[in-house]
Image 1 (cartoon, rainbow, N blue to C red):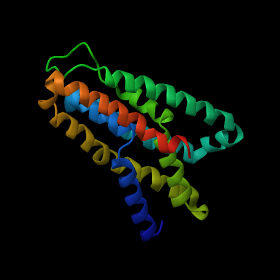
Image 2 (image 1 turned 90 degrees about the vertical axis):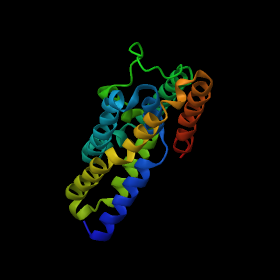
Image 3 (image 1 turned 60 degrees about the vertical axis):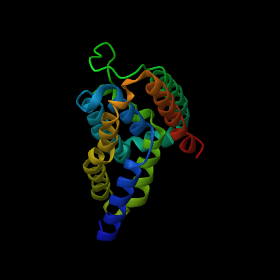
Length: 198
């Protein structure tokens, strides 16, 4: 892969990964409600699950989707239903409690599986694979795309968890927590609107 193409890919992967989307909205809300340490499995599920999805799509699953386009339509409806459920859970979450052991954050496998119903993730994966791979060396260039996403996932998404965790002391007050949780739920739903209608 040429240096200029690699530079463009790195910029694309970072900007796409750090901008608001379902993953980052959920990570920030989890950072607020559970802190950095308890959100770490969720963060790792995103950081490893998304590159794994890019790899699977890049190395063959795209052929299955092209033969069965109805599957992608079904996936879109599943995605919307899951987003509505997540938005409800975030909006109805109570204030931050320092010793909250009843509620649990999304775990590693749940976060990794979420990538398959995340519409922004699909747009990012397909855009990167179609834009930055070259047919003369498709396997090598697709592997570079996967590696770039893998290396940039933690810093670009981790900042959302850190930001959320930093707000925990402020949001221990129920009067502040409820508006914040409702706002995060609305942002989560808003973040998927553009990609749902592309």
